[in-house]
Image (cartoon, rainbow, N blue to C red; front, side, top):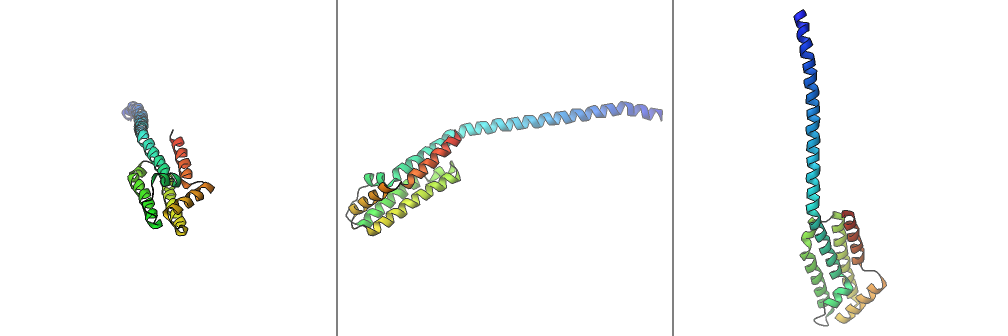
Length: 169
């Protein structure tokens, strides 16, 4: 019995010391892993920021290019037919959109939704104004008059993009 108590007297402190060492070492390893994850996440964000900013820049340029007034200045009618000019304007907007379609990977879902809403609103407004226009030049005048009264949807999208970029920086 005395030998058993003596053995326990040696084993118990060793077991407690081993348990404490295991607990501390395990905590140290977990802390090291979390620090490594934070460093990797920080590096990933640092490397992806220029790509994200470039995507926002391209979408800002897209909004500027589909701004109805600027679009009408850039895309001249090829004939006096209202429908031909409307289709040319829509094709120009769609071409710009397709050129920037991949940028959605790098921006927030809310920003992409704002871009889509802007594009669709402009196309719908062009169609609406074209219904009452008698010629391509009449369509141009009516669109310019329409957007001289109200802000184009591109201004809203641009403000949204600027806000998103401020969050990134």
